[in-house]
Image (tube, rainbow, N blue to C red; front, side, top):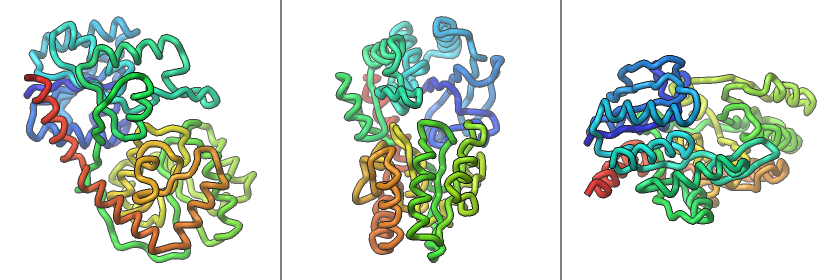
Length: 364
């Protein structure tokens, strides 16, 4: 099959920076058996093309505005086609434009919703349900797409509330890269948080929880990995909470670098206000590391057997959850083992096979 994958970005030619690792793993596995062209709408400033992981990336060079993006995409698809399937990642703009192009060029379009399509979080300025034009765009995407998929049952529930019954298909991780090592001894305990530093990930709740935890588990350290978009505000919060000596900010690290962080961690800790999925839980699971976090995305799906979920924005509950698993090694290892089994069974290869089958079904 010839497949056109439409994305906003995350497919930099480096394969390391400005990328979405789970997306790259999907592209790599899918390209092993199919002809894949990836169309990027908002990545490089000028149009360009380059090979990536067995696929061809065609960057449209950031056409200004939705109408210009749609026209550029349709022209490119017509020039490079015909294709058997269009697949848009995220509703706006890539899913919407893939679906419009599908109707225009009479090609089936799959859309994967893996972001804030169904949430409204005004306190942190997040979610496509906040503004009328975004709500309209999401509705149009759902109406025009041939099939809609989501990664988690949590996201499926949100989708159903908007009148759409989606297929649930996780975007698995590369378990050839993310794999277990011998569990580290403890204490001292090592906690890991992997996320861009931004309001949706709610690191203030994480740091407040960690300060509470330190009162009963002083021999614990927190590693935070992710690009800082908050201009040092979280580092200042660690000083106010008097935990700066027990927290290390590592900044952005590539997926290859992350493996070592997972392998030395006793727990992954997530504090997000929203996750459609939360790929870091999959990465940790593939390294046989248990996750404690907000009841969103995979953590909501997996609790209590494959993760431990607590209410979002509740530092006390998060601190209690972390302490409970640090103090109960048998439970921590049962959760880690169950999560590992699930992540291996739903890895990037599983995802590619699932979508190949789906593409074949909707072509007929």
